[in-house]
Length: 291
Image (cartoon, rainbow, N blue to C red; front, top):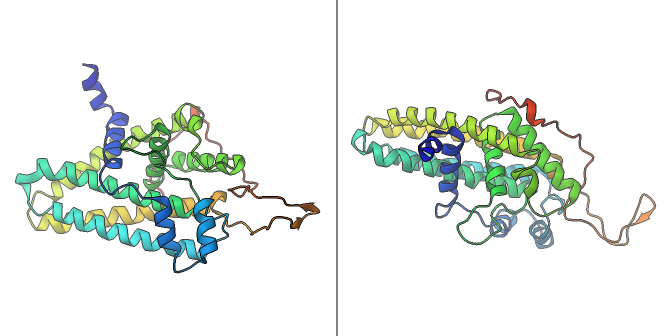
């Protein structure tokens, strides 16, 4: 009986789909490979190496270059997910039980793909650093918040800013496990997951109806995917690019004198004096999507 309740729970429903999507072949992006490929035509080998070993921000890569690369990745992933969604709509009503779950999984899979690409460009650490198919709780938490940003929830925006601030202040190269799994941010993750679980069910029903008519359903389904995926990816890009974590830092060489002090080394992250975002878990309100 308890298992049935878990299935009906919106939070559990969303988490199950997200976990399944994260385990699909080709969904995980190798951070080093992606950054090297994306930066190859715009940066020196030294900058590329530092972007990989530390972050693009630490390498001093310009906002203009990062924005261009982010837009290129968004166009690429949008084209792929729209084509696959259109293909899933071709069989018509008789194939609905098979195509709808597959379409939902590949749609979420492409959301995970673009979330990783944007995160790596804007100086977030490797989201899937562990080998194997397992996805740790911190990764699930930050992906849930990224999805919340995509869907326009204000609390997800604030929580992502809080997590980014923690990494900037502590100069770490991994996600803050405690904050995302049992700390201040964790209640926000759970509320965002519940909200997305409800929304996912409504959106899935709408896409099911669009697939009921063969061929016409393919056009409608592909167009619906294009109309939703593109603005959501742009919303995440805009938010990640606005965070202090993404701000390019000035290159400082060892031994250089800065403000009367000799710099002997530099950390992997810039440490901006950012205003702390208030993400009081007791007063979270999931807002309607913002443009």
